[in-house]
Image (cartoon, rainbow, N blue to C red; front, side, top):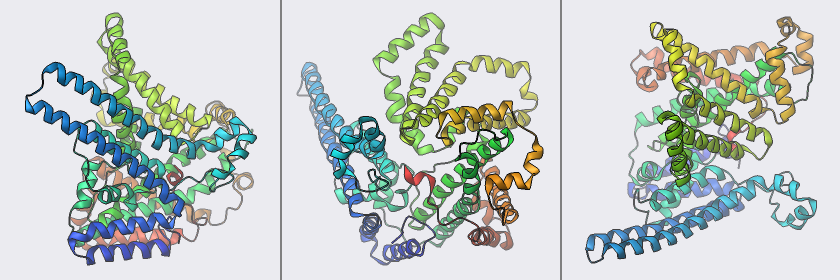
Length: 539
């Protein structure tokens, strides 16, 4: 069964059967029906995959339960009034030592497993063929490497967030392991997220949900809108981008390279946000609202703003469990004090925050893969954000000098265009695996743009892209779907919700909102190459 392909008959049959069982059983048993669907979905991808998600679930559940007991006992001792301050302080220190030992164990078990599975190929290449041969029994699948279990990054991050929240006393731990496993294994989120929080999603999964036709319409609209992004934009662009960027050309004009990079940025957004829209739609069919992951990122005013709008759940996870813990370390506090004494309050805030941002994006880069180009991509984003924050007073003075307040809309467009340019510069390191080639292509884009006439030469373009059959039809589909996405994004940027806006229109508009995307998706199936999976399914 191919349940990873959302347009396959297998997945559609599975989704329909899950919904039927979910709403057919007594409401108090709905969570059990959903848990059964989650287990079936994950087991279908391979029994070995199931072992990994079970390992993560058991380790974080037990670690959280142990931490929760220590937190409760500490509260009870304090409330009883039978202990002196010195005794409470000593017991707190002992409890903290125990909790830190559990924290270390949870990190080693979960992130150690993730590191081994995700980076084994690179590690084996570095350590040599002999070690790789000695550990060949670990080669579960893939091209000579370890099998990467479905959604391991996302459910590892999500489970660790639950553990840390209980560890820090944000809320009490879940008593029932099956209910907790329902949260970890909720099948719509397994392929590409979002990285949900237990206090937001866990409570919904426990609730009883009556069949609601409005939820079905909202879910269907999200699914169709996301599928249009994926199948009418991303899949149709994928082959054209690969034709330019997957080969080591040394004489490509900068215009063609820059065009391919822009297409890649569009492709990446359409593929990832389209998949997330579909996932949110599937969850909505069950009456469940998941964490949104995108908020019009290409309308961002700065790179920092871009990352607050792109992969939102990962950004929040990094902020809560990497950025803040790093910023508030004693060393960072000493650095902040040093900067305040020598350079003032602004640098006392921005220098530690800048270092933490660089560390966060370095981790994000390595999370994408162990290759050098991902490391450079992460460093590029972290450095740009850190420097932008440090130079904020200078940029504010420039805004005053140029009187940007007189044309706020024009200045806002300039900010969005500037941010899009910066994001695309970073895309050279994100998309092109050969670092030397990424720098060469970046140089040619800005210093050797080349004559635009070359883009009109059908014979030259055919030598790069191969067959040009149906290219006009593909462009019409991409442009039409793109304009719909752009219009919807403008509406959302104005703080208007898409569904109520559509429902307020006449019946022709309401029907068109469903049938136009459906028609475009059906037409795109004639041109899209095969059944490519989602880009972020590999992470």
